[in-house]
Image (cartoon, rainbow, N blue to C red; front, side, top):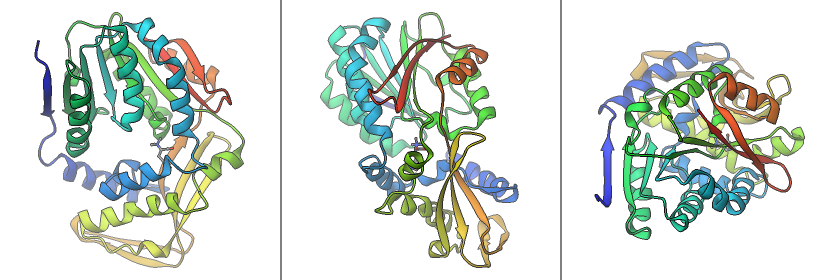
Length: 325
Ligand code: AVJ
């Protein structure tokens, strides 16, 4: 067997720049003006997100961990997975709960994290390779929104594909529909999807989770402007923007925005773009959709995925579901 750690970079060298340019140009030109949450996560953004997961107000990470701690053995028994595929390999704490259970069940051979960030995969993959001797770690640098099937290991399954942390909440309904199709096409036979999703609850709880007292989420939100300044030569002044987290009751989602405090002109030389913002004008930086059991189950079904198990934390704040193609 080929134990070891491999990193397969499937992205063209200019992928980051090309997608950043197209994305920011389109986003700033649309109504409302938007910036994709993808661009939050440079080194500083990833550090700030890590801090967010430890905030008292941000219950999501802890709630999902509670579910995984309790259910990982059951997930291992139900799936008997030989491969754990992880999309957007986030916190390794959660990964380890699954790896421990699948290792104990004796079925696991391979851990295959997929992420757009090579450095993140390097670090996470190497650490897990060290701690799980005998496990083959094959990391893939890929953009799973565009190409998923060609990036998945095709050794004998069952494969358990984990998409945790309610990252699904960043997608609007259209993007989710496309994503479910991609998933149901990529999964076969006895493969299963493990999806983490944050649930609808009192708006005050939700708003606090995205507008914490210590201001970490505000710094995380403004960080995207530092990213644009560095990567596109832009001259945003992050201090001229207010952090806004609002609950949209119609779409049942939190929207993060950056609101211009004063009228201003921003230059983005690498895009040959000048942006005129009025006082009070918003840039929408993130959607965090919240879910209900019936509607999430129905939209997965329309995408070709059948929910087989639905688990929540004791306080029913967060759900972890298992679905099959
Ligand atoms: C990592 C996308 C799940 O939407 O809750 C945290 C990111 N944004 N605080 C979320 C985030 C503001 C997070 N996800």
